[in-house]
Image (cartoon, rainbow, N blue to C red):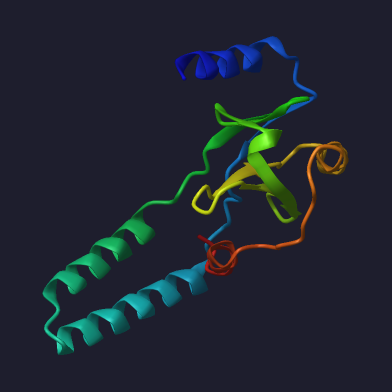
Amino acid sequence: MEEVEMKKEKEKFTDKPVYTWKSTDFASQERKMPWYILVTVTALVLTVLLYLQSMWSGIIFVLVAYLYLILTGLKPKMIECAVYEKGVVVDGRVVYFEEIKEFWLVEGLVSKFYFSLHGKISGQVVMPAKNAEVDKIREFLKNHLPEENHGEDLIEKINRWIKF
């Protein structure tokens, strides 16, 4: 088992990537006054509802979350991405094409490639592609993997809508 893992790591460094880039994991959006008003009103409404139900720990949670959102801005993390002849590397995670069931692209401020892995609980690997040659990468991936059109997931839509 350890030999297989070591072999994967070795192949990762010996192959030359077809495409390589760095991207932020999400688009940082400017928050204007209406955003702050909406967050404040939402926190107040939740606090009042929780107070009426005597849910003290809920009130503390809402207030801490509110202070976190107001006082700190989430900073996007830089992710190193690469596409190889045998698979992809996302922030150091090696995923071979054999492990991937399908992929799709969601374009936006930061376009993202989604890779659905084989297995019921395997999940997805998300590869941000800001400042990358998205069309060329997509064509390359289509030669190795089936492409589906699942679109943007609900959490991403909500995050984009509330500028989070």
